[in-house]
Structure formats: C-alpha cells, structure tokens
Amino acid sequence: MTFKSIKRKSITVFEKQLVKTEFLNSGQQLPLVIKPTIDDVSLTSWAINNRSWIEKQLLKYGGIIFRNFDVSKNFDFEELIQSISSKLLDYTYGSTPRTLVTGKVYTSTEYPAEQSIPLHNEMAYTLTWPLKIWFFSVKVAEKSGETPIADSRKIFQLLDSKIKDKFIEKKVLYVRNYLAGIDLAWQDVFQTNNKTDVESYCRQAGIEFEWKSEDHLRTAQVCQAVAIHPKTKEFVWFNQAHLFHVSSLQPKVRESLLNVISEEDLPRNTFYGDGSPIESSVIEEINQIYQQETIIFPWQEGDILMLDNMLTAHGRKPFSGTRKVLVGMADSYSEQSMAIQ
Image (cartoon, rainbow, N blue to C red; front, side, top):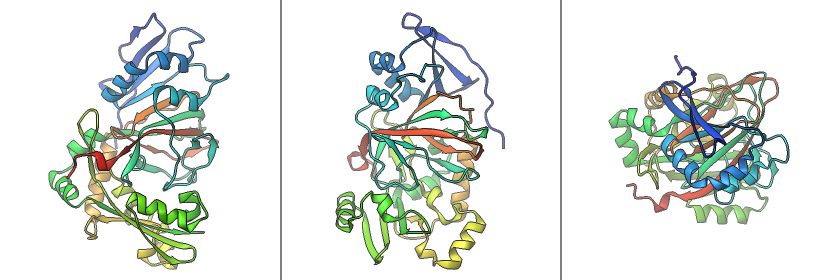
C-alpha cells in the first residue's frame, strides 16, 4: 500500500501577518495547516475574530490542523471549540470506550495500543451526529499513533455504483448487544443506570430495543448509508457498515467471541436495512477504497485537528509509548432533516 507523501507546499500569509496557511502534502489539500507567524498569538482569540473564514476553509478542505500555537499556558480546548462551533455534545450512545476529562471533552477511543481503528465518520451509525469533531494532541506516542483521515466525498465517488445504489436503496441496519465483560455495558453507552431512561432515549431516537436478560440489552436501528452535506450539498459516504460488520473483527477475536456467544449476540454487526447480510466482498471493497484514500501525517505536540465530520473520516494507527489525544464534538445535526431517499 502506498500512502500519499508528506511535502511542503506554497504558503499564504494574511491578516496582518498573524498566521499563514500551507499544505502538508504536495498535490493534496487535506488537511489545511494554519500556523502563527509571530509568537504569542492566542489561537482562541484569533479564531473568534476569524470564525467565518475558518468555516469556509473547513467546508472547502474538510479538515484543518492548527499547529505551533502556544497551547501550553492557560489554554482551554473546550473554549476553543465553542469559539468556532455551537455548544459541545455529550458522547451518549457511543460505540467505543472513552473517559470524560472535563466539561464535554473526552479522551480519544481507549482501545489497546496495538489495535488500529478503521476510518469512519463519528456517530455515522445514528440518525443524529456532530458536524464537527476536534482532536487535541497533548502527548505524541513514541512510535506511530497517527490519526489517519480520508475525504468522504472521494470515498463516495470511487465506490462502485452498484454498491452505492444498493446501500442507498436499503440503507444500513445496525444491531448491537450490550454485554458486560464482553464489550461496552449499556450503562456506559447510555450513561445511566436507569432502564427507563434507556428506553426513553431509544424511543426518541428511533432505536428498537429488547432486554434479552437483566443485563443484556439488544438494539437495532436502520440508518443512512449515504448523506448530503447540509451546506456544500455534496454526496458523502456516511455510515459504519464496514466498522461494525462481523468481518471487521480480527479472526482470533471473532473465533474467541463465537466460542462463548452466538453470532446474533455479537457486540455489533451490520446488515442491509432489510436485514439481509452484507456480502464480505462488499466490505472488502469499501475497506480498499478507504485504504486507497488514506492520508497519514505525524502528530506534533500541541496540534489541534478540526474535521468536518461529514466531509472527512478519521481513524487511529497502533502505537507504542504513552499517547494522549483529547476529543470534542459539536454542532448536532439530524438525518431526518435531509432529503435522502
């Protein structure tokens, strides 16, 4: 596999020489990099004064890295997000383990360091998702640990039209089982110990649910496979069919799980919206397109990556050493307001 190389490109300086923009990859405009040209530029203050311009760049490029700003003293990640976005969102109905750090800022997914996380759009397995997601690199891993990204518009364009048409027609069915000790417990996912609250959430969100036992909850929901961005009006590939599908499990992990539970009790799985199985060959092709379009860049300490969550997918590479990346999500958007059939 050949990933796009990282090279410097032309630089633009503006706004009284306070910042400059550049690209990491020659010929590749994702992500846009914004750097200060002088010391002591407050990223939050600058962002507040340039919110409209930042929004235009995000919609154009899909992702922005804020690099080399002084974020070591009196820097508030949550405050920065709020300076450009609306209020931050809770990570309710999440699919991966995270820890709340402060306010509504969380750790990045707490999977073991040796595991990779495939490219995906955050919360694309729901009918409501954040339009923006932010990552703050507090500590860079000793080795690897990058956050790869990919243009969701290109993923849509490159996929075989027969695959796209079938997913657009049928959509994606997500089936999840919450089993303590095997994967996330329902108490962690829904952030409550009250079953009535869980049931109310599911009804409001259009999620089917069934209590298989006292501590075993199963949910099912049909969601979009393709979406139209509310502002750019571009089609994007927007689902997690490949990530939730049984074939995404490592063979040893899958075999181990199926030795103790049935396939229908797997923590997560995906099907076409009518309940029919998604062919493994289709998942393989989707994964190949993601790999083809993957962009990898090395984190620098203090980097802040801002992504349009619909335009750009993200993932995580395995790493060694200590890695600390904080995450914030903002600007909730509902699929029900979109004209996708």
